[in-house]
Image 1 (spheres, one colour):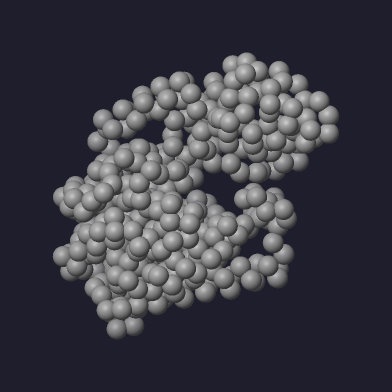
Image 2 (cartoon, one colour):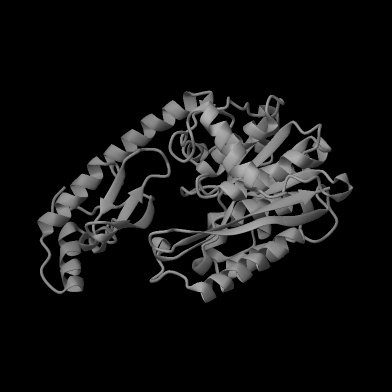
Length: 422
């Protein structure tokens, strides 16, 4: 690496977090699992990292940064930072490609997807985890476990995918309701999750069992293969590696394993990307590849006749300084956010996929709803074009809505539990 090098940051997650020394720092996290390390960038170097796009040399970055900050900026500092990020596998290049190839081979060869976040985002020890789910999640759900009127069966669920420490009550409402109303014959759970790492294709399947501290859950490989056969025009395994560290599905498997106890069941893990459609706002229903795949999902639900339950691990808004906003939301803006979120959820409970997509896409840059793709997919799987006649769920209701507020900077992640019954 020298002054002529053109450093390019890999697609990584960036968040702003409080820091006792600098006030705030930028943290880079790898959602793909190539490295477990985090890179902490102090404020004075954020302008440098923002220019690691592969289009400028280190010398050019130093000149532009100096002009932005109002003085000279040493090119040696830019080069040294680039070298450190390269060693940490945060930059595109031979080191990152070699590490990715090795980790991808290891993941591809494994029959089981490890519990990547056990011991961090939730308890890694079986008894402690079971106690936490019972006492801190389900016991605090305040009645969501009540059986719906008329004995309606739950055929679909939107649950949070925020970490279980912060989302405890939301998970309690979601899975308390599922435990009370899941069909007795249900033995297959289609899991739809947000991919927090970039995807090349609209959906990504995984044929591996998912491990948890409560025991592993097998994959329904026959159902997965049937879905893969409907992926005309794209490779449904091209992004399988994204499953390695993706928490949006892992957390659902943990809660399912607990509430279903010793009951045998299998999962169909699906990551929903739909990145092109989210960037343009275009309804994915206009993409024949997407429609064919989701039609296959709907056929799986129809053929199951109560044996198949669809679960979407999907949060809603991400707002505040941690996510790029200048200031935290005050009470008035929090109220407006809730009204916007609940407006979107009304379209979801109306089983109108098209209206849900349009409503969320309208202010996606502001609300940053990361559950758009999996919730839209769930709605299409039940009701096709939305609002018309279809199979599966015939009614839905919001079980819980919450805004989780960061104690340090006021940033908010909103999430909901929504049950779909039939």
